[in-house]
Amino acid sequence: MMMECGIECSNGAYDRAIAFFSAAIEMGEHSCLSTAYYNRGSLYCRNREYDKAIADWEATLQINPDNADAMTYNNLGWCYAQLQQYDKALEYCKKSIKLAPDNVSAYHSIGFAYLGKKKYDNAIKYFTKAIELRGNRALCYLDRGRAYAGKKDYDSAIADFETALRIEPDNELAKKELHSLL
Image 1 (tube, rainbow, N blue to C red):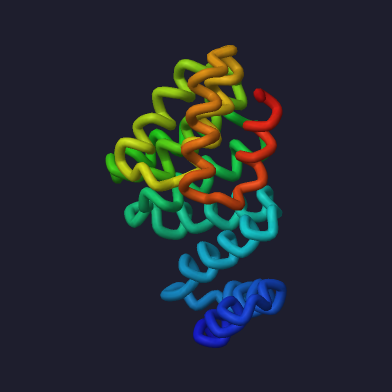
Image 2 (image 1 turned 90 degrees about the vertical axis):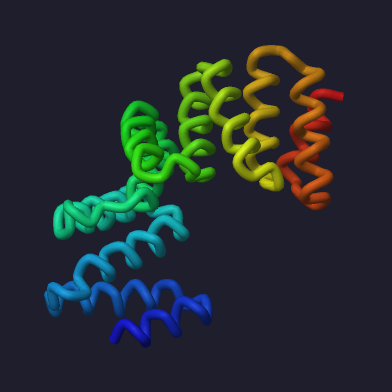
């Protein structure tokens, strides 16, 4: 059954893959239960069904509390940030960093949560850390540029939007943000 889920995912049939993972969860086979919840949560997140993703990743943590990994915590943090529950997002992402101090995604997610809270200096700090760890992510520059713009440091914002466009020339969000400042 799990193999079929992987095939469905690779073909882009996410709803069918969700149905397969749901069937695996209903079967209740403990050895693959955590994996089924985790993977279904990933698909829900991909579909922007953040509440369902959170429920599945929380279930993963309850099934295997001793096996919690940095990615699960980061994923939870990202979903909470998307739901504008920034304090919960920060809580989970900081747990992720404790387990994996070089987790670029967690630093970005923390920056995103601070950006949502309009704590621009904190956001810039975490986006900068993500860039230091892996400087080729346009999204980190884009979001740091948004934080600079929030602080009204337009020169730094423009520089970051331009860097994002050098990395991803077709990035429509970076183009839009840059255009709004020129």
